[in-house]
Image (tube, rainbow, N blue to C red; front, side, top):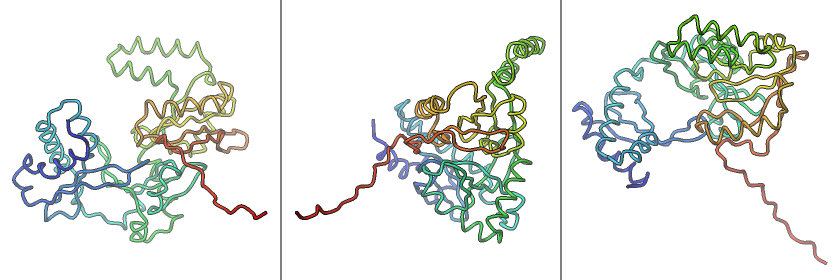
Length: 333
C-alpha cells in the first residue's frame, strides 16, 4: 500500500480522469492550508473561469484508501464528492465585504495551538483562548457555508476591530441561538429521535426530575445548530442563570469547539477535571475540534469566568514544547 506522499501525487496526476469533461482544462493543486489547530492538505480543482475554488480534505480520503485498499474506487469517490460540493457551493457568489456587519459571527479557538493562523486574523484573546470571526455566506437546512475573516477582509470591510467584535457577538446570538440543556434532557431528546413513544420519554423526564437536583447534573452549553457553539460560554447571562439555578459556582469543561460542559464546583476539583479533559482530547476528539486542556471557573457572585487550571502543556496535538536553551560562557577562574 502506498504512503501518503505518493497518494498525494497520484491524486494530483489522476483525479481529472474521474471528473466530468468540463474539468478538462482545470488546474489541480494540493495546498496546505491553515485550519483550526493545524494545517491540512486540500484538493483544489480550479476551472479557468472560476474566481474561487472548492476544497476537499485529502487526509480523509487517504484514510478511506487505507481501509479499502482500492485506489480506483477512492479516486472515483473523491471526484464525485468534489463535483457535488462544487455544484452546490457558493464559491462563485459575489462576496460583498460591505455586508460584513450583518454576516460576521464568532467562534473560539485555542491560542497556543493556532499562533500561525491568528497572526493573519483579527482576534480577541480570552484566557487561553481566542475569539476569531467567520463570514457566513449561506445558512440553510443543509448546513452553513462560511469562511474565516482575515486581516485583509477586515480592511476591505472598513470596520474597526471593536466594531467587528460587537457585530459578531450580536449576529452569533441571532444566527446561532445559544442552548443550555442538562445531559438528562439531551438523553431524552436522543431517545425521542430514535422513535421512542412520547409517553415513555415523558416518564423518563419525570424520573430524572425526581432523582437529581440541578447542581447534581452535567449541563451542555452550545447552540441549536451544534456548530462552533463553545463560544456560548462567553455569554455571561447564560452562565449566571445556570449558576443561580444550581446555587453554586460552575466549572466549565471544554468538550470541543462546538460545545462545553458545566458542572457545579461541588462535583469535583479542577485538576482532576483537567486531567480527564486532556485524556479525552487525545483519545476521542478530532484535533480540529479540540478547544483546550484547561478547565474554567465561573464565579456567580463576581460574574467572572476565569481559568481554574494551568496545565503544563497548552498545545492540543500532544507535542510538548521544548524549553528555550540559554547558552553562556563559564566565568574564568
